[in-house]
Length: 327
Image (cartoon, rainbow, N blue to C red; front, side, top):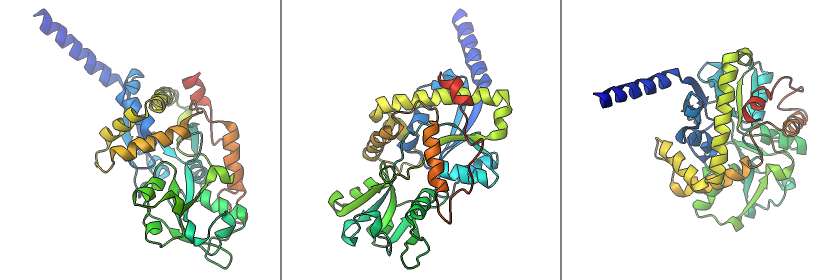
């Protein structure tokens, strides 16, 4: 009888704890993959539970724009690239960066070497695959900085709206395509292309790198003490997950695979991706570095006649959450 009573009390306690957990919905920028490993690790290792949170992680996809999701009330916090977030803010959606797990950019342009491209000076006259849905802004800023038109006119480049795959390069529809160091570049290699056949331009090396995969919320929600408290706990647990993932990349990749309901990912690709992603999150404790923010803004404002943003943003980031979560 005592055993039964003890079990009943334990079950009631667990039910009460679960009931008391505060809900948080996170919208990812893309599908379930090691790009977002820290969040899946935080969930798998119980870090969210330790903080009294019940976190729902919503995968993204080609037709899902995080800014639209949060604007429609579909998430409490979203992952987005800063160019997209700042562009959304200028258009009236008050997104605020509350944490920045990624310190470096993984974006690059991957080109066929046999097209004669050896430097950005060789890009005019070429066809370039570019991602849209907010991912086009870094590329457009880079071209504007170089004074290269993107309308297909003489002396400019022809922009091919690239799907989220590498087919345009493999099928020779484009001379260059957008890739990430941790994903699409390796898809090209896995397709049988030798690295010696390619030329790559990392945005970091070109001096036009912009921040990627930051955590964003709506500005008005930050005035709510309950929301602030949830975000403090969410950021603290998430960054704990990210640091665990950096130290245990193979195990983190397997956790991601366990959460991939589509079954589309492979162990080889996710382990390689996690290894590359760890290089980008290294050096960040989760708090946005103001210097990185200012560099991003300068890149976006330096867009010549067609800049991504037209004025210096105000209130686009805060340490309100990260100071309490990480110190």
